[in-house]
Image (cartoon, rainbow, N blue to C red; front, side, top):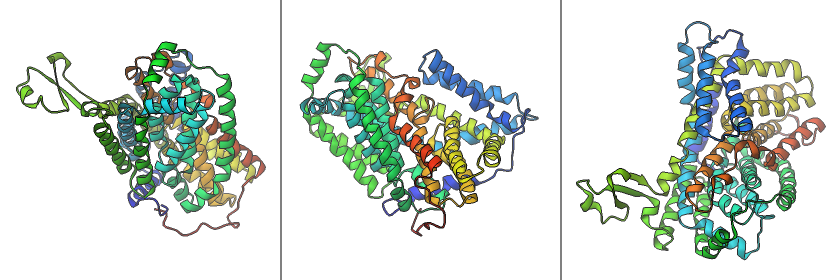
Length: 522
């Protein structure tokens, strides 16, 4: 990794790459050949399209049922004993790449909800009102700030969680179209995830293409910059023409009038996360320091009591009830209302269904790899499509797109296709920087576009908790993942930039044009 990254993150990246490139002894044979191994993932995608797109049911638990049915359905196409198939499901669900994303979601959820409890949303609304940032410009501001955070902390998923919990309700309140605003958040996550030197996708793309991270990041600004400018223009145009939801003048004015600038102190909490991450600390440590900072601000400045962060609702009939009642994080309740609450609890709890879904999807992807379906797809592209430099680069771009449509965690998708990108590039002497940029940019972009992708679903999971946080926020304001994909402007423009680059040769470098510098990459 570069000098700003920590050794732990680099070790994780190496382990991910080594695990992906290692060949297991056990293979799964299917009736219908290698292509039949794509049945579980293909069936799930069909389920997701029908459920979310046709029936308009945005239910993560419903997608879990769809993935379970798909895994069972695929089992009937297995030749011989089903034991290897079943063991592969377990193997897929224990992949470290999935655990890495899950941990980021949980920490980001706790952090975002604690800022929310401390009035940060109210502070944003106050600032938007004071600076006259209306619904037209709010998506642009959101896109740029989300990109800044994602670049600093190196996780687009964490950024999506935080901005959906904080900027989304603020923007909806001032009149921004919810679908457009969600698209701006996802675009910012794409922008920052692509540029961040401490991002897993950046690390994996550089290491697998035998390039140094510093050179890769420096060489991708020309692509990301063009896409960002086009995205800004698109959000201004769309913001001026797409209307928001009528919340009700009374509720809107009441919230705006009660909003205070003090909540903006949590900008410091966010800067603590960015500064700690950029200084080379692990992202979990960085978010933890930001979480502790936000708790201190909430309690010392009177923004939120301790019980808003963590509370034990203890039954009055409990033997220790009277003894612990004086504690600030204990609340005595009737026996039927005993529970644990607060921003730390709710921030993590909201992602539990998504965690199960992602683990099952990664298991389905592992089945496709073990069954040879993934290899069959890539070999077809290598032998039939990539027959010239232009077609080779186009194959790289479209290949990453196809893989991301099936593997919802962008880092996992990147690891899966990275060896094939290297093979194609080496065959046509395409420079490692160029290969790494094609791999990372398209993985970052498309990981936040497909309605069943992890980047979209993690934002949707955070959004589902908002109706319980604000009286004025109704279920109708929650954005169905199937509706947002056209408005992830930066993702689409970044994908388009590389399509045009592949077709025209813009930015093309051969191996002889420039050599990767020998730096400490990991």
